[in-house]
Length: 321
Picture 1 (cartoon, rainbow, N blue to C red):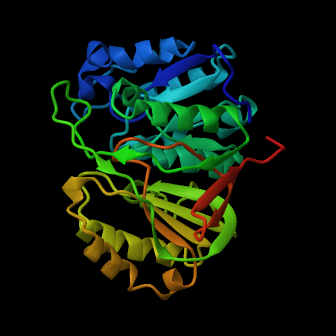
Picture 2: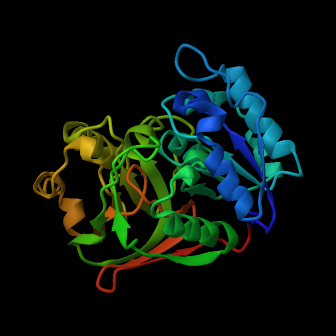
């Protein structure tokens, strides 16, 4: 896999929700300016602002934009606009041989989970769960977010570390009140593990079960988080289904829950206590990924080594990419 180069050309695409669903180009201009301030060139796919009754674009438009971005040799990285709810619609129509023949970093989170894992499953290429384009307009805690993103996108070996603070804020609203808390990653069960990272947003990752687009690694670590619309009841039953499909994880890493989920630590521990397998492997929760701020970036398909005693999480990408 090619890494992100200095002054690279970043193509912004909307494989799920349109940028119009989050205010359009002007409302997100700060993200473009921040990326350009880092030295990158930013362009937008032909249909990134196409907006239909479901806040998205046609399947044909979204597939065309992805193929065009991978085919364009001037593009050094592809960054999704935002998440959404429907990028799994694209999976049967993507040309995975085309994608494999033109490898480049592809990054996003939330609904992009379906594409991140499908591309890895069908091509073996690493993908990146991390900030979307719109995430870069957030001012608070952006230093941590950007540093983690650059580290993952430019290095083949890196550590994941906790942020100093975190928030579950409406960062996409210019006048939203910002409240932050001290970060502390927490250990549910201690241990060491080394395996391939798969997963992301739990509800979206669950859509891949039983399809050709679900990763089939023998040794895997599950990364799991939920979005604002998924409360603790949804997490409870989705986790049960996931552990039936992936019954032997080497470790589980759980991202912080946004406040809208109404997940408490007592509830989370009660849910985790249901599963004997989670008493035998490393499990860390309240980590810096997905629907709270800021986000770290982690490589889907890379080898992740975990030691809960030292709270270290090391990511190693394959040398043959």
